[in-house]
Image 1 (cartoon, one colour):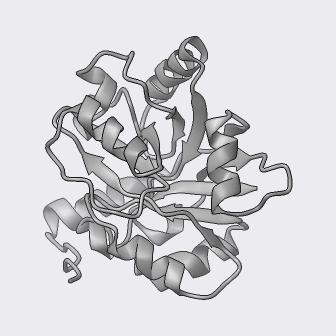
Image 2 (spheres, helix red, strand yellow):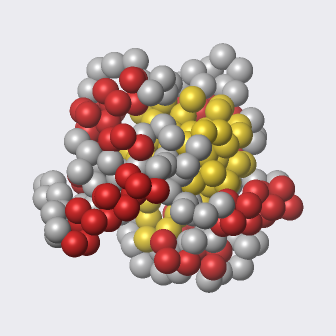
Length: 221
């Protein structure tokens, strides 16, 4: 299965992608499953799962812990931001989810392993994040995953529709194509990072629109 576990919607506050458009684009890109992992919010994830369709939507949230970002893959509840990394991981596991570290070595993007000990008890790391301008951070993540026997995930970290599915995770569910099947496969490391980086031109264009033109999406209630 082709699974993009890290997509942002308008509910993140820094993405222009409407939930229905994300689902349409995911199908166009040939994805089988997605997770809308908004910043400290689950409204987009819940909305996506309420819309009928062929795309499997895995519950998720990107939590801003005290020292960096952590995905709660499979989590359908708000986990407060600002907690320690250890408590955040514990809360994710208590909620039945997997703790995945996105862009783990990207300091300017709140990469967790720039600031905390790597023996944290997480379940996996993004080893192919499509928004990296340079590949060095992805290589660091690959080395960490190998040494710590962590699941390796690819993700678009999409903040605009065109980038959805640029990087993704190939998941071997052994025929159990469901939310539970995807989570179990990742937990047992039956997955690998695939895809390519998002065009630097498109990323720069997005940054220009938000930072220079100041055209931010309206936060959805």
